[in-house]
Length: 340
Image 1 (cartoon, one colour):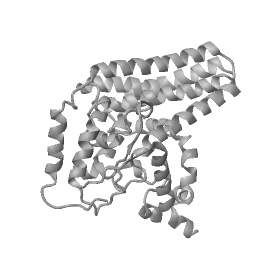
Image 2 (tube, one colour):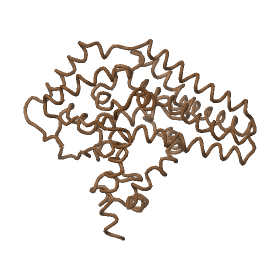
Image 3 (cartoon, rainbow, N blue to C red):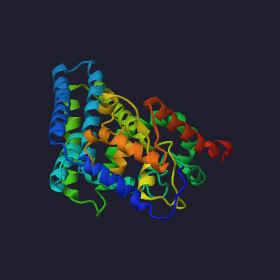
Image 4 (tube, rainbow, N blue to C red):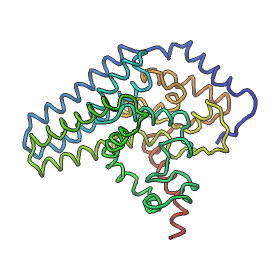
């Protein structure tokens, strides 16, 4: 990890921000998002149309996987909406986010937005980042030492269990979304609950109307498992295996975002599959930057980090997964050495 410096470090990000703004990279990209939204909406609607057309057939299982891709792409659009990348209007972003998140894929937009905002404020911080809370997996040796129950049991072999556990992530997101409705702090709980319920009724109604019980259940398992794995493989490369921060780490905004993030190399296919999150460093520095501009910001950010001596990490997709799994295996070592 880059050694925290003293002095006027806050100006480091200000200088970079001015360069990015002068390059016009914070400007909205309505044309790009019009095309992307159209393609994703077409994939989503088209997948359901093919599902209806095929009817009672085992060929529905590949459609379940295709629909998982469509759900994941809608989720990635909801992510961009939550960051204000698509529209300057918060009201417009919220309405579109509720449609994409709650109604289309069954994910509470308000709950996820709150959770993700806290993640961006303190990425990979073991006390403040909800994405590294030790609910099921442990992300640091300190968490391993304090783990209890299922986290302690799974932590011993968590690197091997990581991908199998991802098959449950789609269900976990839905359960968490409904649980969030009990929070008084969640804005518009009534509307969120109504849209989530409408999604569940329409989703299950469509599946059980078209397919007999055995095929319907298997369709649901394949769809939700593929959806969870897709999302996990999209978000895991970004921070897992990077330094986990504690209360002792005093980093300015630029270093806090860069040192805990990892970029994933790849061409247009990787960029499309990961929804632009392969440029995670740039995204964390400028979360409201349109996805289409992240690639253009990369050389500016990378050169600037190199001039400051701040480590800028980038690797291939498979290597990013390998690093994440190696980290999970290492931090779980204390649990394997001491059996209780």
